[in-house]
Length: 218
Image (cartoon, rainbow, N blue to C red):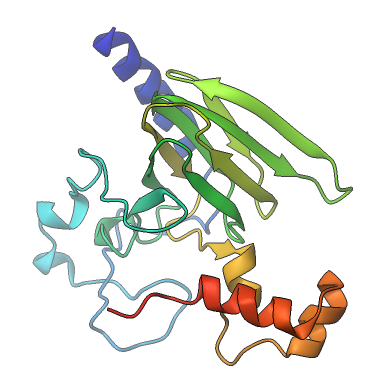
């Protein structure tokens, strides 16, 4: 069974790598030099003489992430910020872990399509089209589901056991905008009169939502 899952995951990643969204690279590699202090679309390249195997390695997806939030899920990214060698290659991964009842809240990835492979458990997943149609399905271990680029989507563990997925993106840094957090916890804040009008609620309700979503102080 483990060999079959590994084979499916290999095919999944191989196919996904053929449809990279970021710009094509013009050389063999361009390992991100994040200390360069130069602002470009991506990162400037590290001198090739200083490139090592560590620039292409990351072991952070091997084990479940620690969940310590009210949503009941945690995302562990494996993007260019963790793997400098991904710079200009147009792909990245993430692992998402969910406790029973856990939710990866409605969000978007402005720079990438997402494809998930269910490692364990069962999830209710879905996305909403620009014509306001919900496309949703229950998925289980071994299943794959795709979320088109830029569309609002979510995953919810309605089971009694933890669940986890590996997510692939056709961008080295797909970006994430959580809908609720973006609107109610931005800096500077979105004006209350915009939120009350948009959601047809009062100022007290807006303040209550902001308080609930505010980052917890350590």
